[in-house]
Length: 129
Image 1: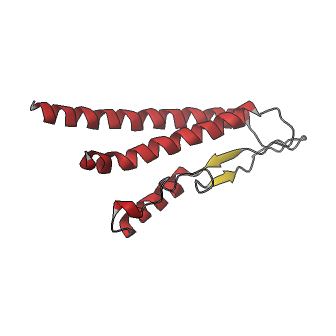
Image 2: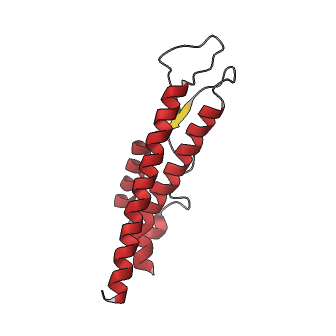
Image 3: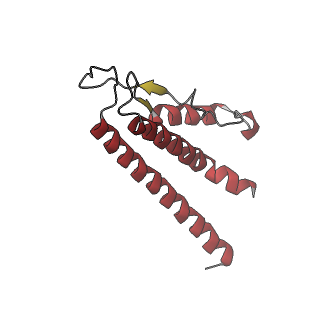
């Protein structure tokens, strides 16, 4: 099963990161009316670039960090600069957050669908179809 773990490791990390990003965006939406709340987001591309760079510079899979480098602290959690300022100091723009959450949800589903197709292909190969 080691080849399966290696084959799906990057996709598993991507799904975990996409899930974390959706949690951050939903927290932004939930706090849209909270005074002085600062909207945050995760820079998915930056984190995945770091993971791919780590993968290219290591010689053994054991050299990866235990969490795969995808903790919220390392996940490029950044504050968003609003287009329109608010009097109460809140930087959440509800329409922008809802749009970003919808796109993140679609990206999560696309990654999950890709993974399901890979698993289906391996299952067919093992059955000899």
